Length: 516
Image 1 (cartoon, rainbow, N blue to C red):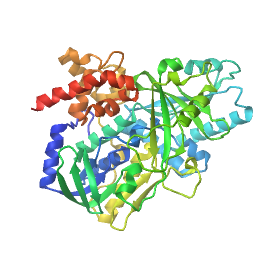
Image 2: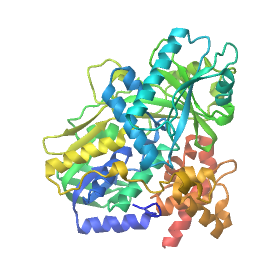
Image 3: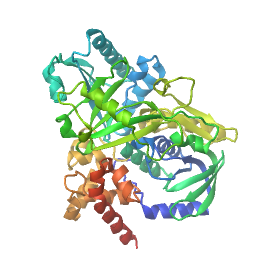
Image 4: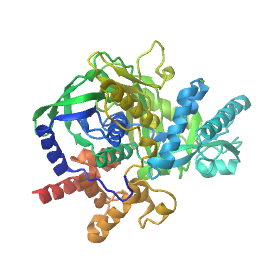
């Protein structure tokens, strides 16, 4: 994969590949589910030289993979609870994402705990010790301090520069550490899927796996309605919280994580992850995170979510109150429900255990094989998707004795990956480089060819018409919701979704007409 390769996924390619699959329905590996784990599995398998098919009944990142905090964690929380293995794994995977896989989509983010009167000396010492342990994890993972600086204590003036709306009265400064942040979790999934396609994988959205065994998958095209049976040497179930619907022997205990969306102005130009301890807990925090499109995301809850799995989980009123009440302990002017611009919730696919609280269930992943040979990868978290994918493909290679090369994904950059001097040479606005990396030049070229494509998709939004076009021609966007909710995150604010809807419809219509 080279930085100037631009794999294009569009409606025409989908139709062609679906037809070709009907003519030759034999592959080495079928991957069901195109969230971050499934897309990662497809990339790993294709990069090893395996004939790979990735199918998704909706769109890339339709489920939990678009509802995360957009953080690439170093595993500090797991170290605090004695889970050294997953903490180290998280720190290693964070380093791979920052340095190699997606340096254009992941950036270092300062994390600030303001030392307010409610944080006594003993609590402050405990947090400081935790941050020092995080430094040790970073060193053990061979991530340099030039990439993620070491933790430190900062003065009150520096704390207020990073988080201007923090209470001033009694502020004793702050504790600062560093972690990774994605510009957008859904964009990471799209980049994984496109890179898998560049490695030879067949990538099909709106194709549902109706039934699956260890060597056969019955598929249905949800657009055209046609069905076909695909024979595979290995089938991998990477459907996250829906894993039990594909393999009924899997039992999950989903946990709901809720976020609220605010205008950046509500936090006065926040430039760090404002981190506020949850009263009564020694290990839980609420985070206010600067985000794309001039937003701040406030999260995170951890609530048991039994029952049927919805396509779009909804926050509860109690979770909204919890997030507001906790963050307001650190702010000069309390936020209210009137300040909320949007909200979202995601379900973590946790394996069921005997533990009473989902907050205590390990985030370790598991690769399970059913009696008929169907392989399921489940659990884990966004940061460790690559290791999860490697383990799942290793299991498939071993079980089916597939003629595969060794895993390559620790050193395989995603489409658009760029950093350092090469990034500095890209002649494009920084906001485009953060979203598209080396492909930002394609957006600029579209602007130059047609100045109308430089216009925002709605007043006050920082997404241009050319980006909608690119999503249709290169990123497999087939519907307005693909454009508004996953290729961009405009849809997180309902009023913005409504304002940009005409531009999304126009982009799809333009390219439908061009195909005709």
